[in-house]
Image (cartoon, rainbow, N blue to C red):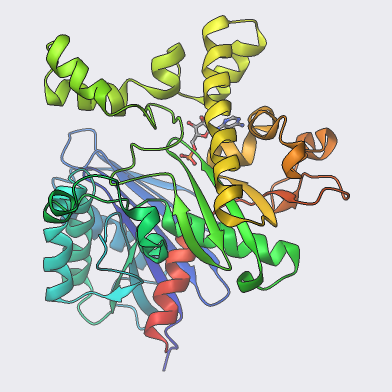
Length: 400
Ligand code: AMP
């Protein structure tokens, strides 16, 4: 009998599905793929088996079912179809698990109903995630479907960290509280940082800075999240590619009352036309740093606002944790931008935080230190791998 060691990780959005097939527990990647623009005429699938030729095909993929069926055919051509006995689980990324899901769960009708009930808290994401769950379940009825929630890692926050200081009854009635996001990444990176330090996660306090298109910070004490910068939605906290992060909530009231803006217009402003894009017209950090280097004032200011916010959070989370063993940078910007890493910790020598310019700019891909030997707090670059984390959590759940 074939041993079931493979996990298919699905990240199903509203109009795209990303997938990866991994062999566990080692985490060897066997294939990656993407179906994009589902429902549009230009829909296409790109499938890349590890060590093999990339294959592309056009639609039509009118819905998620057609998209996943095409992905299943590509995977089957490489030997691991949705009905393969080698498949231990399908692991689904689910953006919002509310306060209900504190870890990965096997999907059943009750779980689906609960994810559905959380749609008002993640209207852009949970419906696409559910589509993926329902479709994969139908295509692979004999394979356990596991939901891994982006919020789960943050459910260990104490109430004084997740509760907003507003009327308790109103907050509770409408489920208004800090939930956080990027939890799968924070979980993975904080554990990998402990490994890099050669210590057990339980013994280590880490500040994780996940800086991608979306950005969030997490304070992780002994492997458990105690605070995070994203809030009820992924809008709060750090300055991001197109999102404002923290602002005075009265700005919303002011714009509604005095600028005649609708709720939808303010939503679009804060989520899609703010952050780096709002400040300087570019949301890609490569472009922003290049322009700043060429003396562009708006790009310089955008970088300053971005770095200032990061420094404030590092200071705040140092206070929250009491003792910090490491600060870890991850995601597209955190892993690749030496200037942003340097700016984020500039002037924080008093907190024991120092970035070594040579280590910071040295080429490298894996987890590595960028602080000098003598520094009391380690600063590290730790590439995130959300798919591997989802596969690991799903595999552990079904094999125990
Ligand atoms: P992610 O959301 O983690 O995929 O990160 C995507 C973002 O990372 C992009 O929008 C870029 O702003 C940023 N990024 C990727 N590569 C680099 C780089 N070499 N230098 C600076 N920023 C980068």
